[in-house]
Length: 172
Ligand SMILES: [Zn+2]
Image (cartoon, rainbow, N blue to C red; front, top):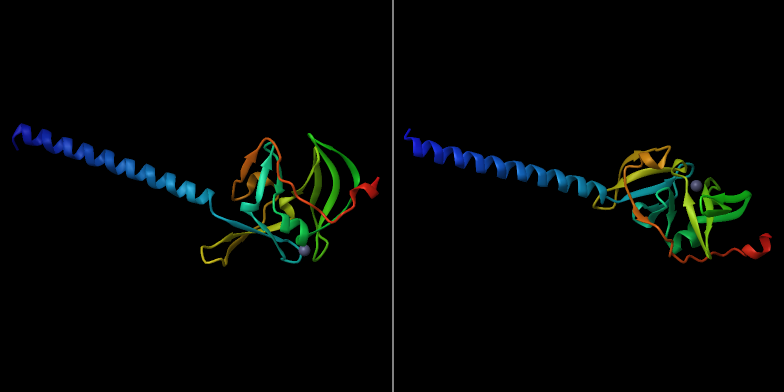
């Protein structure tokens, strides 16, 4: 092969190589993104009642996972005063939250300034991947939030105003 043709061929190969690796990188990134944005369903570990999905959860201060959904407060939980109220970082543990169907302990009701938020223990739930058709995929049980198969929106300030059918004043 004439030297100039060889050089042209090499150049072609090099470009093709680069395009292929770019394509691979793009595919990997898309796979990673779509994995992050898959929706997961949290169901009560004891009675299987559907609690909320990963899209209804936010993370405050890189550690506290709370549900920012009014229907969750209205229909899914019962609230009782905390047996040992007190500070939890800059949140105040005010109450306990329980599954409204079977009374399993789901976590705490925490106070942030004037707002009350339900903070979940992931250990109280079975996590299902939601398929595009809405059916449940494989079940996962995770002990700690760090091992959850999804990530949620991080917030530094809680702005979700949720209302509860509980007279907190009468607890004091
Ligand atoms: Zn339950």
